[in-house]
Image (cartoon, rainbow, N blue to C red; front, side, top):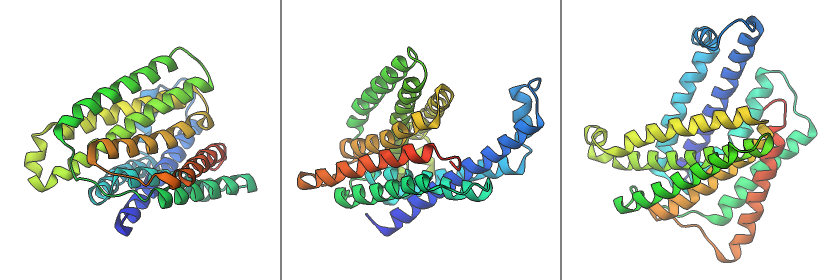
Length: 282
């Protein structure tokens, strides 16, 4: 777990948090200007001319670059759990932009998530694996991901409220974990040359799975509150990435007596996610 990997992953999380806050500010201003008679298309056309929305879009592009760079020099089992720190950065940036001072409960959630990340990564001590996966493993991994995402989304479509949000959040998390694994595969093939990478399937699969992940996320957010979907999103992405890192790239985490602190860390991450998702600043 190199310092460069940690720094790049944290910068990606910060960039993603700032993007979310800026685009939320743009959307809030647009809601204040527009009425029910305005269509979604017209709202979008206004948003693309809003400096905050454009700034958020640019930061989202920067997030992808930083995440790709982190995955190029580090493992999935390190980068994706660290991306959960986005909630911490969202709290800080959102508090400044929206002038909402966090209360004691929010700060306790902040500490729980931060401590959980530190405890899990410290106990797991993820070991670096291969830059690319054995081609034969991608077929099985893709099939498992497809079955799991389809099952979660299908069951989610049959229920309403918080269970629907949690199930779609879980489906989105698994898909985002798959997207990160594909992005790592792309960065691992870059030494072959950009031209060669563009003729291979991983770069296009990354785009397709990324879009599916985004659409599932929108379904989760529409289905219920952030407090219902965020724990599934945070934990699901991290755990899926750890599993894919082991199955595809040969990454390993410490087990044995370290399982207990790892489980405690995961529990703290979940509790912190719930608390921060309920915070007005987030």
